[in-house]
Length: 236
Image (cartoon, rainbow, N blue to C red):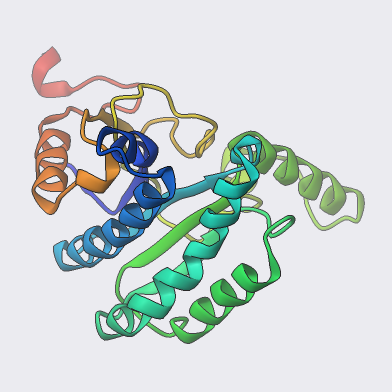
């Protein structure tokens, strides 16, 4: 049976969920935040070691200012509403991405949540905020070049390069799920998803349920993961 330590989700379809109900797009994002709480607590109960959620990309700044402003208010709503419950479930909060451009209040909220949950030993709930996979790789390359110049790094390998990524302390991503049936990865974890399994579902993120997660995991368990090699039983 395939090991499953790290699930990454592109939480897509909030705006379309709202439009379908003739609601403002902001209501879709609010509903999406409520869904984060539900799925995170369920994944923790399943024994998943890490859940990475694509909360806001470096490209999302192109959206209307009013919508971006609302999205940046959501960390406060999320943690004020659910941090106590996350603590009770022993969930640890982490974040990947650049804090540049993030409003001060959102930065403070995230830093406080990271600090308060830092000693928790359950699932890592990792938010990708102001995150872009291409930017991450460029940053990692620059950091390696700096260390090499200063004599702190030697020859570059795939393993040594991972130490310069935001995800250096996280397990390998086993499964990537994208909701709302968009079948692309949109600059998400470009290096980390090299041999992950992908599942695309029609369900909008606000409608995604623990049962949907179970179905994705069941599909993942059926996959044959060869990592570029051969499955000996099927190829004898």
